[in-house]
Amino acid sequence: MKVFLLLGVINGFLAVALGAFGAHGLEGKLSTSAIATWEKAVTYQMFHTMALFVTGLIMMKVNSNGVMWAGWMFLIGIVLFSGSLYIYSTTAIKTFAMITPFGGVAFLIGWVLLGLFILKYV
Image (cartoon, rainbow, N blue to C red; front, side, top):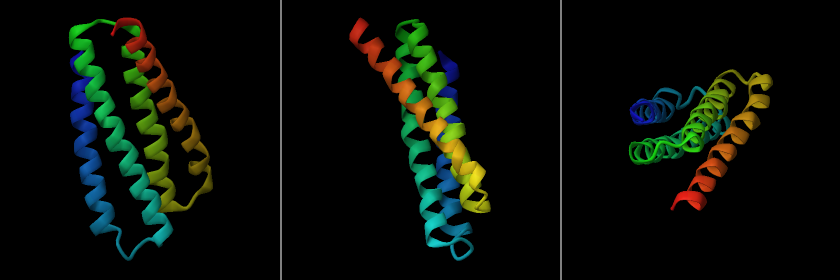
């Protein structure tokens, strides 16, 4: 499915751009802790960008609802986990930090779905 490959491209671009912005644009403007939080968001976004690519590549060969849902869970995880950390690190509003675990759960669901597909079809 091309959508996951394109989502991978978009998220890869954003992860690099946001990583550079964090390193150069936010330096001296945020605390060391907030920068570390920003970097965590970038790291998880990039790891799961690769998961989106894997999902897209698998879907080019096998049309599976489980893999499709894994891809959507990876995207939801990026938005909720990384997105909430980006906002939290720049605003220090704790409500955003409380959203982060939901993104982590979405990542976990995505990995479980991908693993189940591998057990069943590979």
